[in-house]
Length: 109
Picture 1 (tube, helix red, strand yellow):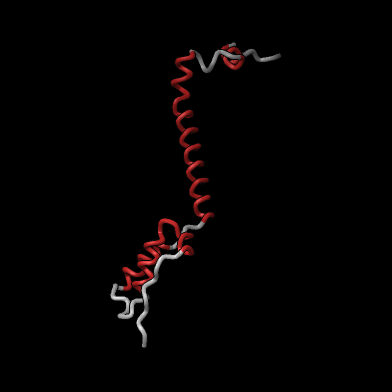
Picture 2: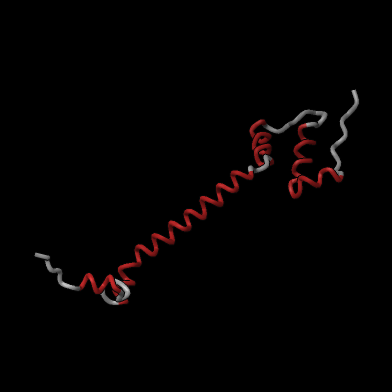
């Protein structure tokens, strides 16, 4: 029975990008003629590290981050509204709403 030769880098491995060397090391470890000497937990951990990420998952993470950022912005405005109103004087910016709210109400007869 012939011995296995280690996997060598070729142009086809370029599509793995920065993980190319890790993939080659991982596969050489698995295809070793003496068998893989690593504990199964380590092999599984390395396989999970090399697993490519889902583009949908990345999109969902970006969408969730933007949503949380918008929520924080709304909460900051909501919390600071009393301070803004007190600096502007009255209940707001002195517009029509303030004039209406400051008038005494009369009950029509």
